Image 1: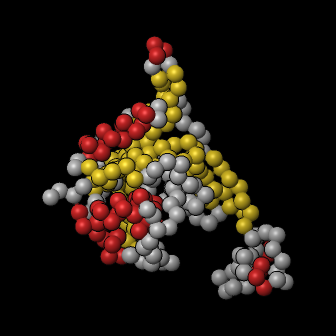
Image 2: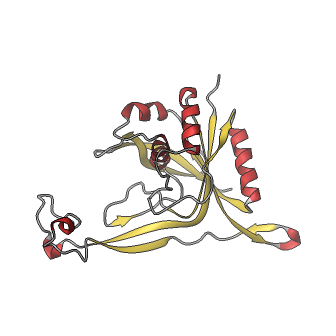
Image 3: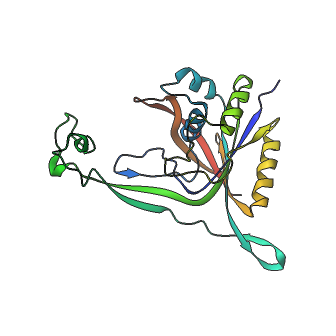
Length: 239
């Protein structure tokens, strides 16, 4: 039997899918990363730790993404696609306002690698970027041995699910079914988008095609404290 295709619908006021972020600047891609999607599934399953064996099984499953933006009434009763909302930049101070004489509050103050007090007291400025009001259909084949467990976990997750970062809470159901083919999953996604009055903004296909080809270091090999990733190639296509 052929592997079934999973359809996930990712929609929220804010989403953030970092691929190469650092502490002081947390960027986001325009679409969900492979590591972010697999991390979401791990949360649903209640999987923790490195998960190298599970990630190795999932590595052979390519991921396609369809991005949707809002529409507005147009001429002759039709609807036309609106411009995407700009990235939201959030400025945060980390480690400020804590009393270093209090042993508990001291734990929340950033320190040097040696555990000593940093120059200037340890307060750090960070910039974090978020996608606004976007929706994505994520389609990926699943090993038949994993499909039932993943489908059940996405409907009854063990841990809370987020769209990238913990501040990005989904506002609609994520699991949208298992399908016999990618075409059937795409048709189901199109029906959801039509009901929500959304239009295709762009597509992201695995591999190299005629379009904008990107190299992303977002395929997780190992989760946990010492994360490890490998590269993949994707192509961004217009609608």
